[in-house]
Length: 135
Image (cartoon, rainbow, N blue to C red):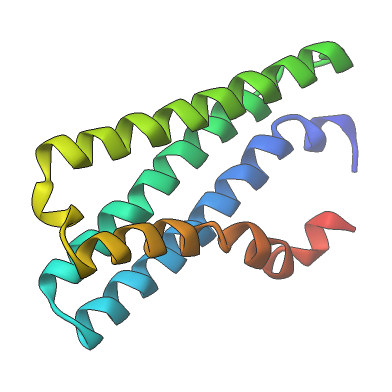
């Protein structure tokens, strides 16, 4: 792989991870709708999307690095991305608690958090899907 192929490859791979995460989210929402009902599917969608938005922020901030970035800059960007991801998750859940109170009652609340956690599986599944990119 020459240097022109490597430029931007980290951000491309990160967005492919996000794509896998979106597919997993779609499966979660559809299965939830089939097994339960519309309200549960809405809770699953919100939980998944909180994770996707936070992961997207992390990918853009952490992996869109200038050429010849120093190790210190790379580490700093990862810290900024991770802190930002944490803040986005906290703000989004706060927004849900304030403006969507019907999603934090009973089984919808459980589905909201379970879907959020299952969306994290993208980071286990994606390396299996994109195995050639890790060799």
